[in-house]
Image 1 (cartoon, rainbow, N blue to C red):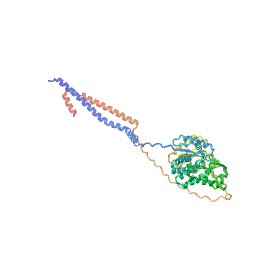
Image 2: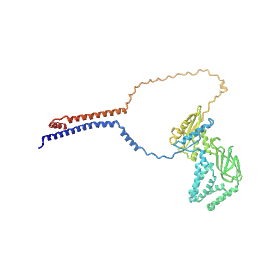
Image 3: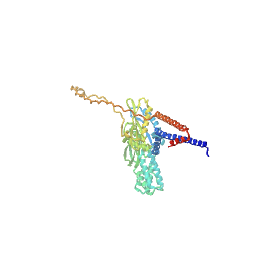
Image 4: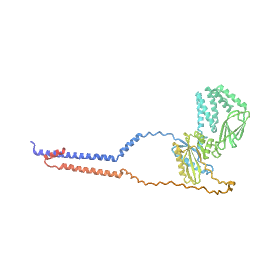
Length: 527
């Protein structure tokens, strides 16, 4: 039999545990209802984090893979020049030196050395086409030795064509002579008998006293050579006169110096020969000639230089195309069509993809520097904006830096409205007062009244209407407002926690009656 006191104690303990459990459930329920909207408010208050993360991820996925960097294009800078007679040469030279130093530090293009420096580095005129011709000559010898006669003949022909095209800059004339000899052999072994005879005849004209190797040259080809050599000896030398338009110039025949023009030569044999005339100002004239022999008189007039070339345009050891280019640019009046042959030749010799130059013009109270850039691939001439320098050159560094930035900025960019086809930088001639003619001075002034001028009524001006400005758009929450929101959210949360604690305490300690009454209350609360 269970003691009544023990039963009463256990019933009280179970009732107390039930009250604690119900209080905890009530507090948890209220916290769930309160915290759910608070979480939503917090998420809306700072939407940028998740959005930024998503946008960053999409940007990473959509960003294309970087393209591999190509080779840096090369640029050749012509000497900076001023229009003749307008300023001292020291001014453009100084600006040109500083501009070269600035462009050398730019990464958009690799600046090539000056033409003089390239000549010193290469031991002569830097001609890329001549170098290629000599390479083809060497390659042709290898193909001929390997028995590839067709390819050897074609290679020798390409080499000879380039050598003759750049005859004015050819220093080793023996390369051209030997190329003719080997080309004749290659044509003969390839089955082109007619071409072989023609090439061997030219070789016999140039070297009539040679002996061909019987182990290398077939009998038929040696006979062709001997017949042509005998013809040269029988005809004897001709009598040729070479002039250079009154200018003193050095005359070369087949790579051998023959004196100063005007000159008369009596030792040039019959047949084909190469005549080169180099002027004292850098102009060069070259041509393949045919001497008739038998002491027959022939006259050749060398036309030195290029259109627009002037005696003080360039150093005497520079080729004609370069002196013509520098002279044309320095005149201040040129066109892309006029400069294109010179610029293309400069490209073939230097490999530059861009050519740049600056022309300076003196104005009333300043110097104006005009930069130009030529793109070899597109054959486009671009004129950048003028840069002004004071007469005292007080803004020298700033102006040169502006020039360098404008020139380097053209590399790889579209020409747009900066594309030009012709340029004329020469200032207009000053107005000159002209005296009236004698008859006009004696004329009496007219007594007729001038025509009456009628005033033109002005159109009525429409009065401006005042318009009430729109109310300003309120900005979103700033940082201060955002901090106030969180302050109130925290205060509300604390109030809810305090209220929950009070309600739980009341439920826990409010009912100390007998267990029966507590049971009724518990049943009603659970429902």
